[in-house]
Image (cartoon, rainbow, N blue to C red):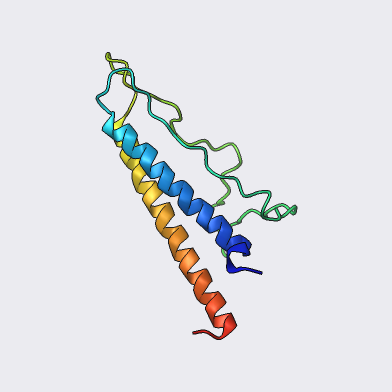
Length: 135
């Protein structure tokens, strides 16, 4: 088995490639922030469900422990909604729909995801080296 056939390394390489391509798309969005009729673009994230066995057992919710009778219950219920905005685009009179603040947030998030993937890739390679007795 070649080192490139290890599933975790293959998935991490795919993720890093996707982050690199996404960085190019986000940079184009920022560069065209003043271009008339330009709409920002986004890449679809890769899906790894086929490569990884998905656990079929449900995840147990985290419950706060009440150690004293005076403690307040910590359950928030499942109907809690948060004030997030999705798809809220501001279109300027020129027809441009790129919001620089949103794009820069995406750039920062993309950079952090790429750094996490590279760190995991490096650590996975180090583990394989240790297992092979090369380090």
